[in-house]
Length: 481
Image (cartoon, rainbow, N blue to C red; front, side, top):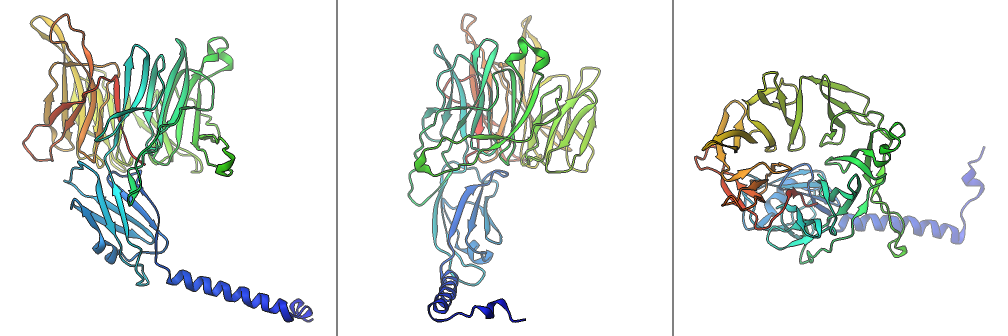
């Protein structure tokens, strides 16, 4: 039987059109092969600090790219290449104090030159502060070397502030009335890296409500992969509690659909499949976005999230999750003993929990470096001074296998309403907010944000204590995407 193609042989113009199309495809492929490899995308890595991730149009030769890197100022840097993806990592003990100019070129794996690139990279995080005034409360953004910039309007009250782990913005709860809160998201898009001489100016956008009802209670958690978890109780539960049980909702970033000129307003968040679990305690997403952890009556529970198969792990005991370290391969938990003694434990994959501190003082907040070699505890204990009770606030550094290695007494400070402790691995500083006692009995205490500059391990120099010259109720580091 003759082939169907032979039944309709090409003649004249039809044959010439097919031949021209094949020739054009070959010429385009040849042109692409001869074209210089170019940078397609660049962004700070979300799962590691002080790492710049670059994606090229073709696989890169690692040796030639590493040899081409120039930094101003000249600081320690390592380059790793995986196909067309390059990671530039600032190495310790470098302490970032300003933006860097990065120039790089090199060759692809075929020996063709890559297009030269010049970047301006500021790996330092931003600051998010909750500021109060007679007008209410609002969130402001603090630049490393510049002024503060409002990112929300004044609200009667703001709570549950959470800068997202991937740096896209901040979620918070704004009071509607004394018993109801509306959960909102405000995008924050000043990138930490720009090409060439592009401007770095950024204008804030109006906050947008998260999908869902107003809430009596809400709790947020986020992952490095962009997921957002909202745990709460609807305000309607006041009148119909049986019809409005506590909920747990998981969102992923919304996608932009349609053309820009249509000016279509796209949803910032898309709700994923509802979660059927309703834990009694606060729920935290694992930094990798593949599971969540929460307390129950038997201990700390870790369960996987779709699309992974269902898995459940239990760490027995009366424990609270305090913080994750780095990308989440390690965590620090606080265990409460029956005799009121507290123990701080380090959790590592495949190993039994390791006790790094034990005592009777209250542990207000915990921070750790990326690999949990250094762990910081903010503790408070009640003491008597001149017959009067007062709070004794200490910042302790503990190290696995060594116990307490340094202690900083935060004199003239007491517990704040929302004690926090955050570590920035780029500038090697801790951030906390405490109440500063008045110099006289008539002077009211005021909230003060403290910056604690850390020393390198092994140095016999105490941490340096400084403060932010701006009153604020609480403050957070925010990574730059």
